[in-house]
Length: 439
Image 1: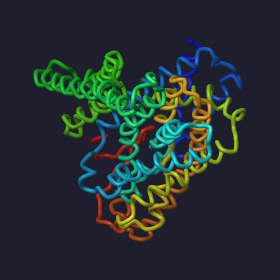
Image 2: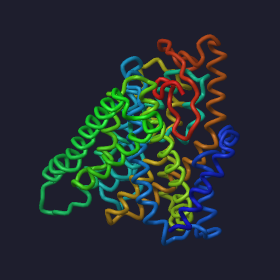
Image 3: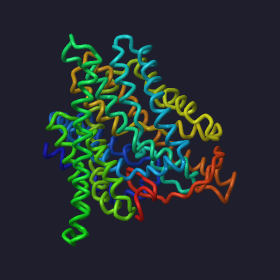
């Protein structure tokens, strides 16, 4: 295991030295890290060993998602939902449920061997999006502001929204008590994992941010130490909820929402989340290395026509049609809807959700994990390779349509009211300036 850890973080260090030029190319972030993992794993150089990686991948993925859920929720600019509700609000409240529904329906057709609940799990696992794979989109200052904000807020919140849905389907599918009615199981689940997660996450966030304010007002905490509490708070919420029988992921997400709401000042929020974002980025990229080493080499041996078709449909029709329907009536033109619909890459949340389902030992776990892995691999390639080119092309259309409003207002496919510009941010998890504060 120590060799695997050494290889992981040595590659993270090497990548950081050339991150800026790499991020200007189509080959950046998850693409390079997953490819390195494949090359270093059992199918290649074998410097990442099979025995070490399976357990390490599960734990690393869990802690990574806990940090990502906390920071994404904390830095999410919920004011965007109030000021420009049309895009992010509809993507989350209409597009996300429709995506799960369409994914479920397609799954029942392509995988008749899976039960209805397993198809629902598959659809839920692949519903969240990951802004890291579409970084060129949400960091391009020339794109219309509502498009960037909409995709950014969607990717920051949809994984947290999907957690309780996934846990309910998983509980019903696992059915530890076959004689118990499904409604009883669902109510019990809400009362334990979800309820404990809500209470622990929200309670610890209130106590933690309150303690930070108290200590800060008295000069007890220096500037260097301000960067550590968010990491500690996120992982404390996750581990405490898990230890008490609740969902650590819900605790992390709720804790982030509460902490972000209490730390309203942008600079204060940036100081609070800076180290947590950095730690989350490092863990996320390391997770992609292990994903490449553990999963990618095994996928070709298990591919079927149904898996390939579902993976393609998941990135196109299953995602793009719900987005089209959700954005109807917002003033978006055809190219705007297609652009937003295409940039729904599947990433870290889907990896962690698949690990959770795999550990549940369901009858159809192999078909589920193979389909999820194939979809993520296709997404890494398709979205990673097209993000720069398509975002640049869309930005040029925006500038040509209205040079004075590109980057500030909807144009080249948008007809809604103007929005302010969002500054560029470097890093695997892109966020807006209003979310992150002055960087």
